[in-house]
Length: 264
Image (cartoon, rainbow, N blue to C red; front, top):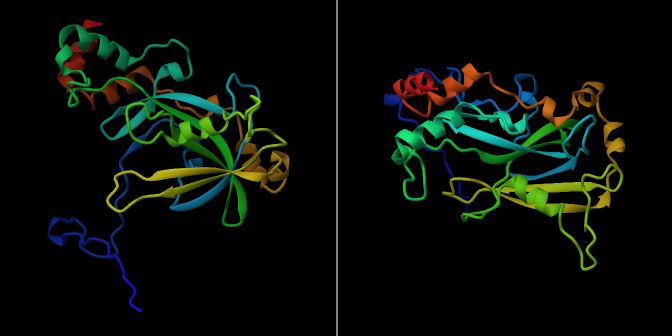
């Protein structure tokens, strides 16, 4: 019987700055600024295969449900939460830039006809707390998921899929399952797969059958894990206005950014 082994592509040593195998691996420079730094290590990253998680109900005091919607702006090498995520109707630097560009250089903006244009609009995402088992211990983790509904083609985002799963009704109009309910909620399995050559992974979701009371899960956790749980709005980072301008300069040429700033 022959076993096929897939080897990783070799790095071209002539194009590498590393001279020995003992050099430190390259550190990602991606700036994910959606979550406050003190919570960044609690971000759950799904590994290939199946992960079972228990959704944490909404934690008071909060104005959100167990899932909080996010409005996220992307720039070259990172992303951050638009101010309206935490403050309804708030405007940000990207809004001023969009208004300015629409008035002075509308041809520069992204559209269906101009897919190479500058994109200054937000993408829907979500965040929620989940309890998962890692290395034999139950821990508190934050899940960031896409809120894309699949309306423009492609698969819906992980966040939208989970939210939809909680909204299913039976023939009598009753909710089929309540995975976020403190007592009746069951575990949810998330299976990550990625076809060879595919740019992005895909996710399959399935509800467990047995109730998993959240207090029973909390009772198994270390005190510091329980203490980490807090209202979702407490974990989302809001950039300063100056930080937003710095992010905009990674989307639009700095001289144009300076022009926008002077005009407003």
